[in-house]
Image (cartoon, rainbow, N blue to C red):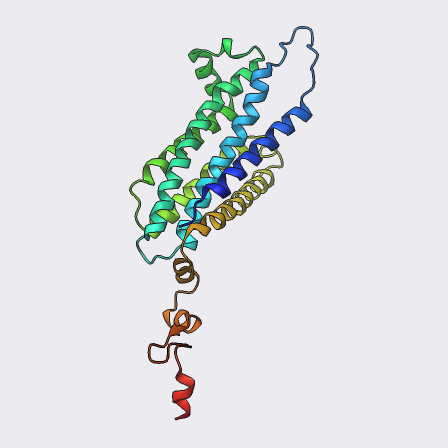
Length: 257
């Protein structure tokens, strides 16, 4: 079985490098306005970094569930590879949940502009009561935690599809409470939801295809072409009596007789 790390580690390193370059290029000294607190440099860096890791965990979760439910063979129960993918999705969903929770105090520190010294439990609770963005992060954290727990017990294809739907639902709240999701009546949130779902499914599908390289050729062939007769015809077998190969089945010659 091929290792996944030669593919996943460079991708993660490239994403982190792109984030660092983006933040470095866009970082400028901001002058303080009289009567208003200045922005905190630590929070200004931490919030986008957490967002990138949050999005990567979401894509990894969706990709593993998409691969287990669609790309891998299975009738009613998951195969061995599908079970491993669902368990991997559970771990990435746990990371997704923790990053969503960690974003709440980071957003509060960025909002206050005074660093993390003023972030107290009381301030966080008040921030959760008043900020739709913080509430959306908590919703994502709860849904991702449910995914992490359910992924340890789901063994069926139907259950995996259900987890995939929950993962797609968990990707929506932060975008829907943003500026784009709050404008345009019903059309604004609908357009944002379709955009987010399309991006997550597309990126998750790429992850699933990359990880699919670790599955044996026979398993992938069975998933893509489940008809055993056609698979047998496409794979020649060795003729024991003559030591050569013959294409199977040879029904055309038999038909001529």
